[in-house]
Image (cartoon, rainbow, N blue to C red; front, side):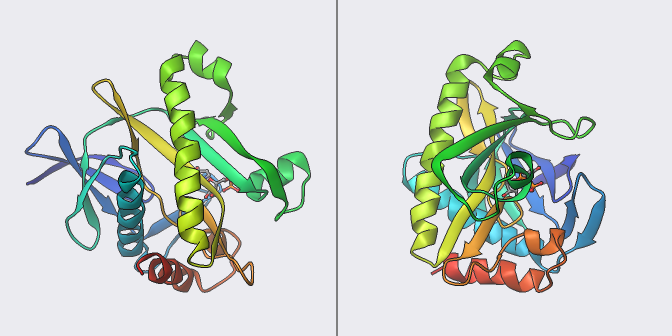
Length: 233
Ligand code: UDP
């Protein structure tokens, strides 16, 4: 049974349930970009992200990675295991895009010779600054063991998603993961959707993700539908 809301973010609400081990996540249509400076709505985004995330979490679980996903409850809601989010955003990059292109002066679309992992400290006031292992350990955001597991899992998730998507004509450019603690376990949490990943069409390089909203490219809802259509077969 759905109880009180315990958290409202930019794209999701989290509710307690009558079982203290379970939360309900509700996906919204609200979209923000550039630290909340750009705001809007993408019609049906919540429904599509709920469905797309569920598909990805089930795929990842099938490959032996533990996630917070339990089951889909409705169009916009999923039941998840209650975790405490580790305050680190893990960014996985296969191809240069977005902030990396600006930071390193490399053109968008450059294939990286090796997968790049980046960590950001989850803090809205600070604008999610990039941090390294030393900061993470000094601030006690995670232990060395946890960090090792988070890195290995992020790389494994990258391989799982990359090959699944390649078979569906989608290039996985980059994406963001969040992890949660459940007792002593680390579980993959949050969402995996066109809000948190960059997806390019393999043959045309057309952007099929939130960059269409960030950069006012039009056909935003259509791009989310296209991803859902391709991953659900
Ligand atoms: N990303 C995200 N949430 C964030 C920051 C980044 O989901 O708060 C995702 C983003 O959608 C992209 C990847 O992480 O798939 C890398 O993003 P980048 O650092 O290039 O930042 P951006 O260009 O989105 O500002």
